[in-house]
Image (cartoon, rainbow, N blue to C red; front, side, top):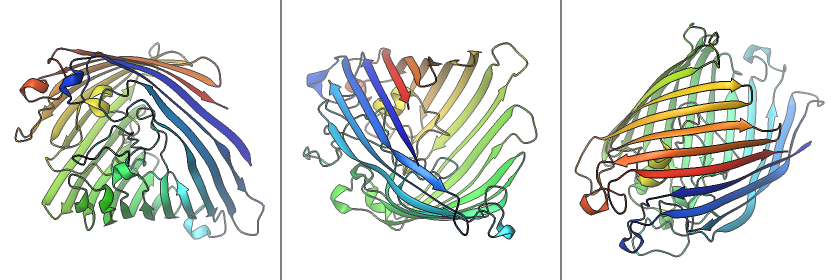
Amino acid sequence: MAWAILASGAHLWSTRNYVGDPEKEPGSMRWQEGYAKYGLNGTTDKIIAGSVYGGFSLLSSGTWGDGDAGAITAGNERRTDVEDAFLGWRSGDLLPALGKDGVDFSFGRQLVTVDGFLITDDGYNPGKAFNPIEGVRDGRFDRGGAFYLGQRLAFGNTAVLKLGGKEGLHGSLIWLKSDNPGQSKTELAVGTIDYTTAIGSIGSTYIHGLDVDEKYAFADRLERKGMNVYSIRGQGNAGIENADFAFEVARQEKRSGSQRAMFFDAGYTFTDVRWQPTVSYRYSRYSEGWDFLFQGGFRKRYQGEVASNYAGSVTSNMQINDVLLSVRPTEKLTLNAMAFDYHQLSRRNERDFAAREVDLFLDWMVTDNITLSPLIGLYKPEKWLGNGGGQSGSASTNTYMQFIVWATF
């Protein structure tokens, strides 16, 4: 068994807000977030067949100050709760036909990620200000603050069976039940199949919506019950050294009709050039009624700091182009620049979220345990709250800044 502590604190500031409240226009907002996750995990190899593993942790979190710029948190959220509580078994060499650890079964409260962009985690972390149901401000969606840091990632209850290891033909059968009110406590059944080689993998995901809690259902969440999602995806270097490619094409079938989403990204790292620059491009597109499910960043790559967190939906009715440039002056310092163009596909919605954004940030590993991550973002919407957009005050450029300290022990 091993003890582990993960902690982070952030100071965030935005010159504009997206709360949709005339009394708060056009005011800047300042707030702070923090969390600490502490627990133990381990693996026992010395049993008759295979190995047993598991983990248990608690997570404490909070938000202070004005609350975030998107009216998700109010600034007075605090909570300590169980984060992880799971057990698992891996087969080791017991079933050689299925490869090393060809059977891996786990259950309980744990983080589950499916390759691609449909299920990343259960990390959506609303606070007391979140009010998706008209007239409801009773805190029923509150998860304890730290909306941006968002480290309540585990699904409330799961059962995961993985077959075939990680090479060649392999797949999984997954049951997920979220206890997140911001996700309407959705319950899903998931199946995946993949074929993985040294140059990459190709695979498919199927998702069937089993249930939602009607008490927390809003927008089109009731359609998750009975919804089917199909996707084809791939990732790897395609045999090109230092290259990186990924894509996914997905289709949702629900009561209101069919919806589609897709992304493609391609990148290359110049390993023989000073500072080893990485350049990548990503294209993504979501139809008007697309349900983002448990989607996070594409392999933890945000769709823009302001756009994806505060300014409005970027995972429905949107086409996005973005580029990333990253350099590493030292092994412990990475400098990054990202630029985004958001094009709204349909103008029938009440709000127009078309915009452009540039984010500049760095990750500096000061010690083996401490990392600093300052960021400045510039977000320029086409419209503001007064003429059909979402930004307060005007459509002028919003300057957004954050400073995060990450610690691991």
